[in-house]
Image (cartoon, rainbow, N blue to C red; front, side):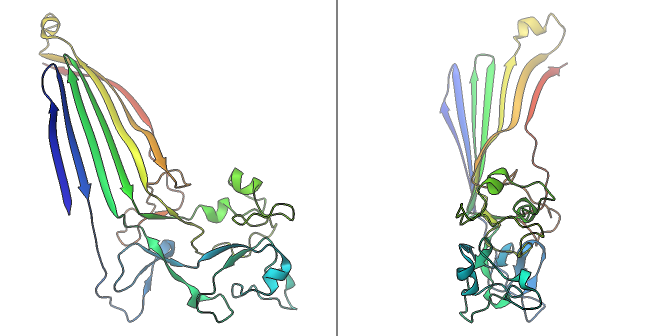
Length: 285
């Protein structure tokens, strides 16, 4: 469903018009050529009854604050204490996950739907002004309710000393004297659960963006005639000037697999949209 409203608010020496666009899109998988879910890249799946762009994984439940808590709690399969590989056991500072089926082990049976890349709604809002020979256009756009799989966090929250990490995550990581419940301990061999797809990396990617601002001046005809041109407009514009979002990645509009209509809302090193400034002339002969 799409709603488009256009209004002329002021008419005279000052002209002011507005255009508002509001869109809602819903989709649902109704049939698969498979008796089971189809797992795709970026932690997404196709499941009958769910929309395309559904994320599926474990529920992140904070950080183990002590070895005793880790040894008495359900842990990821492979992180149980074993005599042959004691280093694989979950300890204080490691991530913990919810045992959704209550069987005492965190395995594939505990995965659940973590949201969808499909927004609740999208919108755009444009205001156009003109005053004598000056014109101004201001264009906002936004998306609400969509989730993004920030796969960059696999590296940016892996404190093994071999790659760049988020500054706030590294400085606020779990240590015996800093009981962080968000960021795990530093470990030379890397996080025990690195690569595990969970709600820890599925973020709210709703955003409000000032997409474009353009200011122009139309040179009076009395001057353009002397230069033997029909019209002359001088303008300056800026694109992606300002963005407000809770998404921790570079760009809430990122879509690494943009050519794949089934894997959407995944950010794996996607290059952000540039902030650009332009100055130009429009000449009519």
